[in-house]
Image (tube, rainbow, N blue to C red; front, side, top):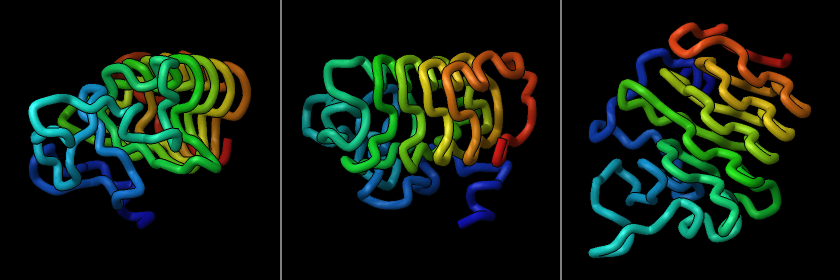
Length: 167
């Protein structure tokens, strides 16, 4: 699993499903899709938001937590991910990358708001606190950025600061 998380060349959408299992919500543009990177919505003839697909385990319903996000988001009601007002909204990913957000990451108001994922492989047990990773740019965030605005604005769009681990 460690080599998967540190991969710098993720599979493009439609090639392989990077979402680990049904314990994650496969989000594309803020909507939930079937696992296998299908472009078919979870509910036939309609779109299910990521928040609705999370069922309380991620992306708080009514908090606009996961607007326009493309990622695999872990569902865990005991340790929710992307939780807090607009916690993961406008989380961007480029190059058809689909990062994994897990282990109670992106918790707090605007915690991962506009996090520029670029070729981000994932956010693991990180970005906890209001604005913790807001407007940041980094390829991997693991066990880092704990506290209000801890890593906010780190890096510039297109200029990564590198991997953040245990910091």
